[in-house]
Image (tube, rainbow, N blue to C red; front, side, top):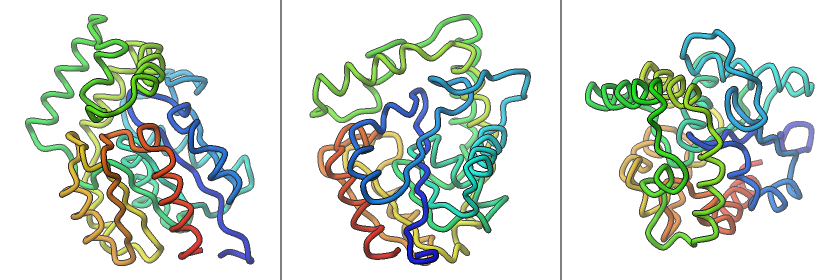
Length: 248
């Protein structure tokens, strides 16, 4: 703890969603500690993209500015998928602001050449207004057993993301550097969460993350895909709150 109080928790949403993906876990986590779930630039109620070149550092700096505005010196920072990339960006550049790290359905490595090309192709399609909308955007991300209600909720969020944001986000993720070296020397507790049906960042990727960080715990959620806080809100909240209780 810091001064006898668990540090605030910041959770950053996945692509192509917004902070509403955390709605189902919000009450339980907020009852345990202060919780911030900002909408990232271009998503949901977040600020507009503006003229910034595609770079996840732009989003990370927005998160840092929000912490500064809230008077928060150090926080437990976490994220799902793209949100995890942003949390790792903050770890690389501002480790003094990180009291703990939560990495859900994400990876520390940079994209390989094939993955970068897929993202660039998706960005070019988005430039032309050709984006996967609603259910088509969500289907590859969730487990087969994920409820229809959750699918509909997530599809509605994804369907509201502008094509320009999709293109920007794909290019920014393609350009991100490797964060593994920073994770390997982290000196604060780390929680790694993954759905055992995650086809995007499979459990073996999460196990490698947990093996890299010196003080990491790994939780695999049965029957969940790539969006664990939405697909298994109870399991995710229990994992996070349990970890907070043990480590803070």
